[in-house]
Image (cartoon, rainbow, N blue to C red; front, side):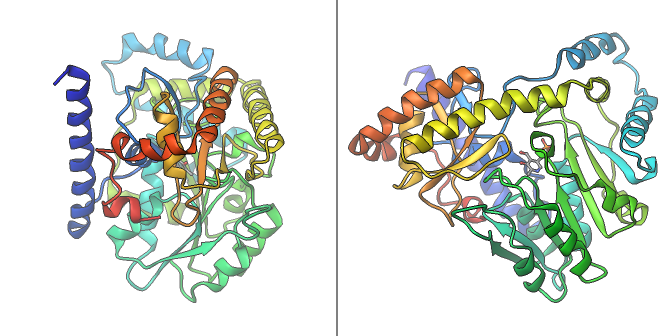
Length: 406
Ligand code: PLP
């Protein structure tokens, strides 16, 4: 067996073991805290060296950290032997000041996956369901597995048009939800739910239901943000991450913003100290006023070019305002993922409710040109794409409960 086949098999094995562990661990109420990278890995047709090929399947930002963030990391390294707790307070206060928030309503985490998981654990239970959009980001459903909560999935409204959260149906879905989860813009569609509809949701929810508004992608669109709900003392927790527009997915930094009594519940789950590199990189990113508009334009222009090209070729896409969109390939999406993977271009994921649609992350301009070329070839050769499916997918996780979650 040559080394590359060896490593593919080893990786497929460890992937399977990991997700079997995840599935089995639910009985012990100790699931791993999942994030987009796990979910993308679970559907990747073949194990791929992250340094090889084009990876547009995990909503990452190929631009990476800003120049100022990189410099801040380099500058702090010599002091990395210290805990430097003051940096965490400094970051919290900087963000709170910029947003006009009470610093005590802001909590710092290594990414937003932890507070997402903790919110579901803290506020849902056997009698307090989780209400979530479908297709939507699945990580909260994994946390609900641990809390034993029923998951109520509500289809997006106008799925072939605006594809936004169906706020009225979400409100009607349960008399007593513990958490209603809104992802704005939504992962995977990249679509926004208008502010007025989120206001209806906040006003109409039972008084002890927490509205969890995940703004992982908010910097990529111009939709109004939700932090004022927290300022107004509503039952709202907002999540922010530096993994998307700020390009820090591997560096790890995020915030949970919520009323003091709500975020106090996180204490129960414990909290470790933060890496100093992440703290200074996040602060440098926040201080760079040009960063959000500049990157929003770069990613937005590439997204618009790609969407226009696909539409001119007759493909239906979601009207995304983010760094990802869903593309209807009019055949099992898995076949197209496998055909693209054979060309070292990794797209996806797929949501069971939309089996012929594939999520595409917006990469760099050049990556998207390579995507176009490969996609044209794959779609011109359906028989080849179908044949590729089985041989290219030996280690995939189709049978695990993990991929059946959404
Ligand atoms: N929320 C949504 C909707 C996401 O798509 C992601 C990652 O892709 C996250 C939260 C969490 O990301 P992180 O833990 O890297 O902040």
